[in-house]
Image (cartoon, rainbow, N blue to C red; front, top):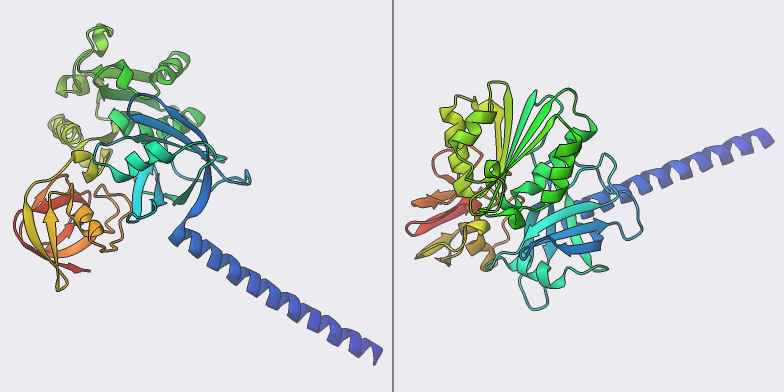
Length: 362
């Protein structure tokens, strides 16, 4: 009887432990799902202006715990809702890479019409917390890319390129890397001195600024990122990554096509429609039977968000496909989407109306 009682007690304890384990696992899944939807709070450890409009931020866990890993080139999404204002959601590329990150680095350009960037410029001080969604994005450097990597950055587009460079430095694997960085002058180049130092220390890393308005710079740095510069660098074995504003992106894609580089070896990411400035025109929008309007916002996605339409959008740059809509009516593409779209569909982050539109959620 004693053995039977002990056996029953043991089985009861095992059942209780199994129930507890299942409950804890369910709680863990709920917590992970909550962080995926609402984000986690990270503390600003450092805030520094690199130039008059480029803000460098370093984010850490409030308890100094390690952060989720990410691939070089991915982005973070910042969520915010200032008092008395609409919710904001913007994506920013991670500007540094670590195999086991204890901090995230961002470089954010303050835009005259950017609600989030203006708010961060005023509020992002050390000690403050920001709500962050986990790293995401498909514009990433992988170990099979190469053997000659060509990174092309314009302005704040240096952020994912810097992360890719950090990853390459940890495991070059015999690959060469060339970084072309376009800007007005040396003062406009974020992390310029760091890049010069790294190029001096690593013979396989070639750093080439392209400065459109800096007569004091070395002659090799002067001039725009044009076809001639690309033809001097790009070869048949090059793998090219581009992150730039719409004009430079389109020009580089055209030049690379002329040089005969296959599309499969060209990877790109745009800044997002907000970087293009205000749109033009006023048009009626029929949003699933609800009367809305477009009134000169940078993109159709901006217009919908401002009128309370909660439309999923992760990248705001034509890559993630989250803001895909059914559309009747003509639109103007302000930046080229990275996804092939069937007739009657749009990405709201990439376009503005040319006439009244009928829109439906897919």
